[in-house]
Image 1: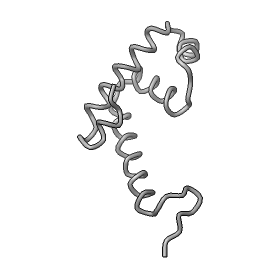
Image 2 (image 1 turned 180 degrees about the horizontal axis):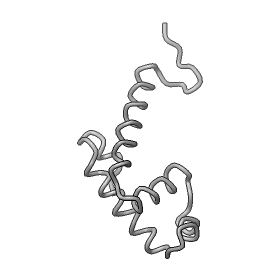
Image 3 (image 1 turned 90 degrees about the horizontal axis):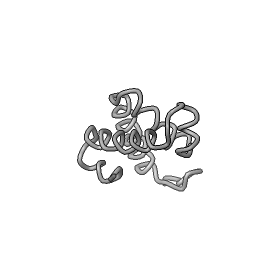
Image 4 (image 1 turned 60 degrees about the vertical axis):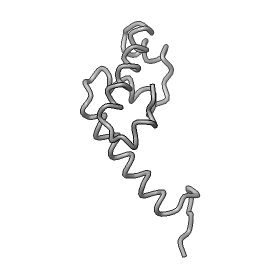
Length: 88
């Protein structure tokens, strides 16, 4: 019998989660540096737009635009099954 372990997910759910992470990481690598950077800061480091703007020394509008365009480009690079996860 399988054990849900620390995450509370089955082994199949863990496998799928890992595969999705690999697919998304691969797609992120294909983005240009500006878009990849803001997506990583926002979704991996959980930074707020104002923090990202200060860190990158650009306006909050620039950060917001890069986030939107980055998500749009990322969606295009993902398989159809995953695109709905990133609807902009």
